[in-house]
Image 1: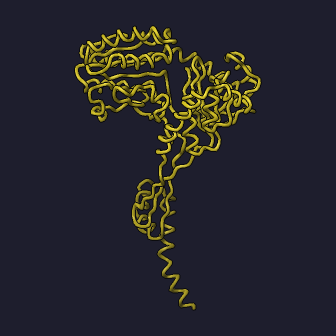
Image 2 (image 1 turned 30 degrees about the horizontal axis):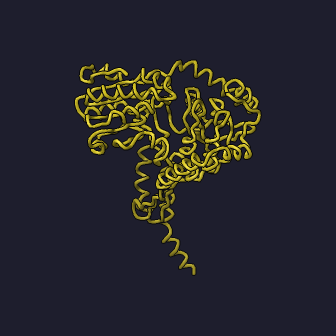
Image 3 (image 1 turned 135 degrees about the horizontal axis):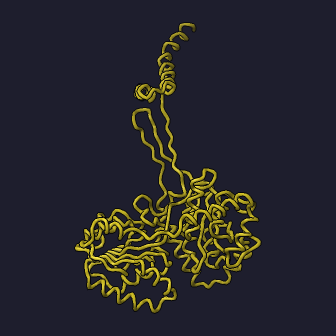
Length: 441
């Protein structure tokens, strides 16, 4: 990990240091993905099978995972992993259930009632990466809020072969439609639909550069599907002072580095001696990692930044906008109000990032690559759409109508003004009509 002293860097160099590594040849990736999407749109399942033969480790003729296959996967798993997944599901469900929003009703002025309501997105697609490490945790993070939101149809795609853990987690979360297909082709299938895979309205879940590019392309096509958030390689930033435990910090940095060779880890500390101790711990702990080679590659692009004080550390973090932010300082909660841009924050020595990745209850689907400045962690609201309702009484239109008329007139929108004028005239004529009716009687 490269070590830099923040105050010695020019503003231009500071900005450069906090810039993420390039995501490979984006133009080439875009072309490949565009061709995959076109093939899936035009030839459906036939194209998916061909692409599966090219890209999957265990290509399948039948894309849908049958109930019998899920039964067999569940039977193969031990009670220990089943119990762990079920305990995590309970915590995640508890936290996300608390996010249910009541209907908002406000009378903005007499006779003018406004409401804010939510309804579930009808059809959602969940993408769960396979790769070198199956991710049942991602199933839980994506499927539980879909269930709580009340989404009518939930489709899950994961590369073949689907791991037993993923299939068990899907069933435990109530997902009934699982397809063993991955990559950009899975995103295309969910966005546009095929003979076997239903079209969805919104796609959730992380993936490699090709999956990320596919999500971007289908979200820009009105015929495609919306997506949860833009994303890039996973990342963590740790703020630590002299009170931090070097072994704890090293383990947190390594737990992120082992995700992939393009992951980035950043240590921001006020203590040079702590940085040295953490470096020694990283070398010691690396020796025991099964994914040591991956972690070592990630560390080559990672940073140690030495700063003067914790306020400066917070400013550096805010500029970087990390996906995961770990605060290991003497009083971590005191910094919370100073931290503006992060996907998820982990406070204190006893809160490793791992707990958020798996089972504390918060969602681990987070904005990366600096998108934490404008995007939020995944939550129940992402599976819902908001809509407003307004209802006026006769007194309401009498009071509000002249305001609307005047603004519509200023904008030159005569029909808008006329729609109000007609109603006000009708109300003004009501007493006269009533009097005439009395005279006739």
